[in-house]
Length: 325
Image (cartoon, rainbow, N blue to C red; front, side, top):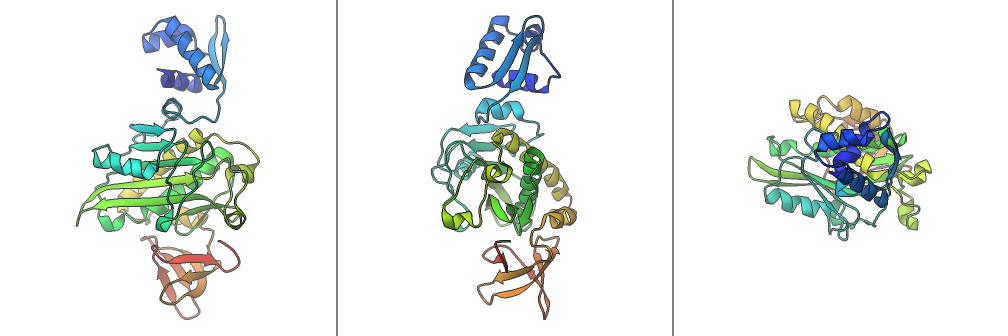
């Protein structure tokens, strides 16, 4: 009931009477009063005025099952939410849930990860109370070969969600690194279980640097946080909700063609590499050229002095000639 009370207070224009809450949730005034007090103890600032009712003044940057449920506005992502104060990896948890039959859109969020991973098995530092660590389960009826562009769609959603909640300008370093002022602010890890012509499930993991005040020297050259860029503390639950709302929107567009065909323009608008000189670290033979946007398959178009080349993601990396982007 506490999550429903929070949602009611957040959506209200002014005060919500105790009687209205009693009738809505079919409980006594004493039950409402106890729930409100418990929310206050958790850090929510709720004003109570006689003959007016309750009013939400402010909410803390608090991750919990109740908080995530109360801010949810999505249609299908997060109908089933699993929150953990600490877990090994939200992707690991989400894959296990998917294998056990959890529904399309199941969301996993943790306040801390002890075994977070990035691309190519790299460790992902996941301190408690600092950042966003979340994963969600997809069970789409699409061709397995069309799933790779979902990471690009996720990057679009993360960029939009961060901009909406913080006002910061976000770009995307192809294919799916979200950057602010040329530094990485988010990592995205997509994992898939398939049969020959059928997808069992896809798990998309997202890690966003939020409250980090510093990074190790080498990492600090390419990484940043929302706090370092905005100078303000942010609300992680609201960031999660904004990202998931944006993902639902882009995902529906993606399903129309199962590729980036209808999303090329918004993606290119965010592409940090767009019309910049880049170096493609192809293991066969690295080369340089100018990035010219993406194809419907999500490939990066690179014009070299001799030809136009299409770069597929995977083990190939793209770097700016004069910096990370």
